[in-house]
Each structure stands twice: as structure tokens, then as C-alpha cells.
Amino acid sequence: MAIKYIPEPFRIKSVEPLRMLTREERESRLIEAKYNLFGLKGEDCAIDLLTDSGTGAMSTGQWAGIMRGDEAYAGAASYEKLIDTARDLFGYDYIQPVHQGRAAEKVLFPLLLSAGKLALSNMFFDTTRAHVELAGARCIDCVVEAARHPAERARFKGNMDVPRLEQLLREHGGRVGLIVMTITNNSAGGQPVSMQNLREVAALARQYGIPVCIDAARYAENAYFIQRDEAEYKDVPIPRIVREMFSHADLFTMSAKKDAIVNMGGLLGVRDGASDLIQGIRTACISYEGFYTYGGLSGRDMEALAVGLREGIDESYLRYRIGQMEYLGGLLDDAGIAYQSPVGGHGIFVDAAALLPHIPYTEYPGQVLAIELYREAGIRSCDIGSYMLGNDPDTGKQLQASFEFTRLAIPRRVYTQAHLDVVAEALSEIKQRAHRITRGYRITWEPPILRHFQSSLEPIAA
Image: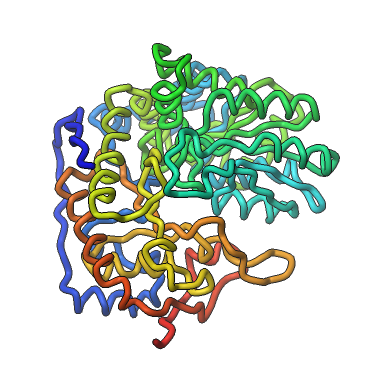
């Protein structure tokens, strides 16, 4: 059903021109990129929904902060401002800036995980899974069953399956080195996690003496869903919800390029000051990122991040942000196009397996639909399915993902209602000709890990 578009709670002060290539030009660009959408140039994408990471529009307050950046190598005033803001918001003793979320994982995970260890999660995203495996450990996903049924409209489909988590802890408790709670749950369709679920996971983790780490890239969107859909939090301000969410974990890693609305930056947090762990974090940070009071960021980056942490939890902004997803979801409902429903926080995850049921997972239906979207209207998106999941690290065999999604990740404060209309129209056009898309793609070259960023593909002949 049609949903009213929520007006942007801001005015547009600067614009970036877009250009639309012809269909023939787009076809040529796909061939040049070897059908890997990461290989396209940004300027060749009329609407770029590849990711919401670092692609948002910064505010006047953030740009003003950039001019105040203190670029001292050690102990900069911008570092102190960022740490004070993050401590106040999350309630953690130790905050480590890093250049982005995967850097936080690279610094933290080898301190907690090693060969023979397991990490359990409501669902790992690609880089998080990769860093667990690079540390020598293995991943197990424990998302609730409702998430595996995209057409089912259920709240908090990002939750951890607590009975399964308890079963795994009973079976493998001595091997489990870490529990990761991804909020919102990206791989499950940007679906939120309830406060009750966080409480239950934290209680189990304490019982077994296992640390809990929040993958906090989209913490603000998750807090908004809790306020909107969890009855006891209906009248609780977003900052208080955020503080309580983080109280149910021991650590967090954050790509600040999402909900903190910066183009570069990340954080790593430790709730209670465990001196050995903090010293390990600082030592690894100096080796990989830079001195621990800048962690791979310039002073101006830290200033923009300190402002963005506050702006990202503004309730009027979050209402508009989730409202964009609901508007696009309503258009897709009208067109009969299935997606992970209800809409998540940062994008629409179109159910490519439902749209292209004749394409097997070994031919990557999520990637097929992403390529067709670019072919149709110059819209860049990405596969969240078997193509992204890759091969079993032990056997080398193609894994079958729980979902075959094409993710339309909406950058923050960037696109308008008219852009979303174009996306819905393009998907409707593809639906009309879906029966003529008879085969998918094969991989002709791939790297050993995180293959979807670099691999080469070719169409399989009909």
C-alpha cells in the first residue's frame, strides 16, 4: 500500500550533479567491470545504492567541525572531544578511534579468538565473518527463524535465536571465544534487535563467562525501532535507549560511516577497563592504525565524528530515515515485489530468489538482479546472498546463503522521493521481463577471502 513520504528534516545547501548513461554505455561498463558492481566508477552510477557506508551527506555542523580539527599527532583536542562524546553516549570506560569498522575488528578479534575457537552471532556480516576466520576461528549464525521467511512481517527479525544459542553454548562452551550481536542485523535484511533479546543474550553470556561484542554500525536505527516497537520503551528518549543497549555488552566495534554519518571513521569500546585487553588494543592499534589517540583518523575526522554521533540519534532525523525505507517498501508492495519485510533500517533487501526463482543459488540470483538494476536504470546495488557468502573456509565448496537478497542501501541525507520512485519503477520493469532472464553468472577469478569485492564474473550462456 502507498505510504506517505516523510519530508526531509533539513534543507539542501550543496548539490552534486548526476549523469545518466545510455543503456549501451551501461552495458559496456558492466563488461569492463567483469560484472562486478564494485568495479564500476561512481560517476557512472545514476543512483548509487551499493552501500550506506561513508556515503552520507555531512551537515553544516560537521563541516564546521572539520575546520576546528586539531592535527596534533598525540593528545589532540579533537581526540578528547570525540572520547568525551562517545563515553557519554555509550557509557564505556575505554574508547579507541580507528579508521573504520573492519579496522576495529582487525585490532580486537585476534585478542579474543584463535584456531579452534568459535564465534556466535545473530548473523555475521561479510567483513566481520572474514576477521573471525582470519583470526583462525569459525563463525556460527543464530538468527531467529522468522528472519528466514522474508514475506513474514514480524518485529525484531534480527534477534538472536536464544534457545539455539544456549544449545551451542552447552555443546561448545569451552570453544566459544566471543558472542557478536549485530545491530541492526545487516545480513538478515537490516532487521532490528529487541532490548529483551539483548538482555537474554547477555544473561547467557555471563552464565558461561563469554564476552559479548556489539557490532554497532547501525546502533541509532536499532534504538529507534526499540522505541517504536517495544512497548516499554515507547516514551524513553533515544539516548537512554542507546545507553541501555550498550550496557548489555562488554565490547563494541563500530563503523562510524553509517549511523554517525561520516565519510570515514570507526570506534572500538571496552565497557569495564580490563587493563590487559586495553593494552593489547593500544599495541595493535599503534601497529595497524597509528598512535592510539588518533587511530588512523585526522583531527578533522574526529571532530566530524563527534558531531555525527549526536546528529545520528536525533528522533526527527531517524523518523525520516526509517520513513524513506517504508515509502520505498510501500511502492514495492504495490508492485508485488517481495523483500525482507518489514523494512529494515538502512535499506530494502529485495528477495531475488522470489523474483528469479529459476536461477539457482550457484548462479547468484542476488547478483543477477543487481546487474539487471544497473542495466535497466544505472542503479548500483549489491548481492547479499551466496555470491557474497563465498566458499566454506575448510572445504572450499560454495556455501548456500540463508537468503538471496539484492540490497538497496540508502545513503543518509542524500536521495529524495523522486530518486526512490525511479528505483521502484526500475524494479517493476525488471519484474515484467524476469522470465526472460534465464541464467545467472559464473565466477572466472576470485581471491581467497571477501571475494565479492574483487572477483570477475561472466554470464552463463542460455
